[in-house]
Image (cartoon, rainbow, N blue to C red):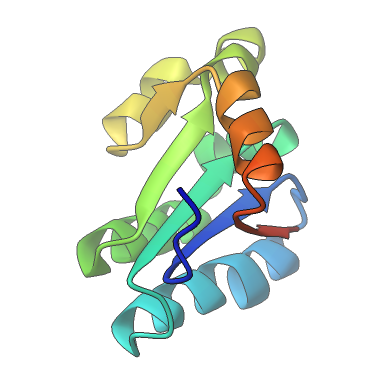
Length: 114
């Protein structure tokens, strides 16, 4: 399963500057400049709330989706934080990520954790 052209970004840091100037910047540029064939951002924990409330980050999510970055969020987190509908409205996939993250780790996939 190990694909050297696929990157997962596990995004748990809800700091706006880190979100904008690292997570979104790297994902968008990484896709646009072909650093990676596939990039998946995994929104987990406090970042789900940040995405639901911050217009700048919502615009960055739209840009990321537009250039082909796959954006997914932990459904359990979104449900518990009451932001499921907002995230779905932004075009973000929601799923339970526990097993998926475990598989990524066990398969030694490329995982950047922010």
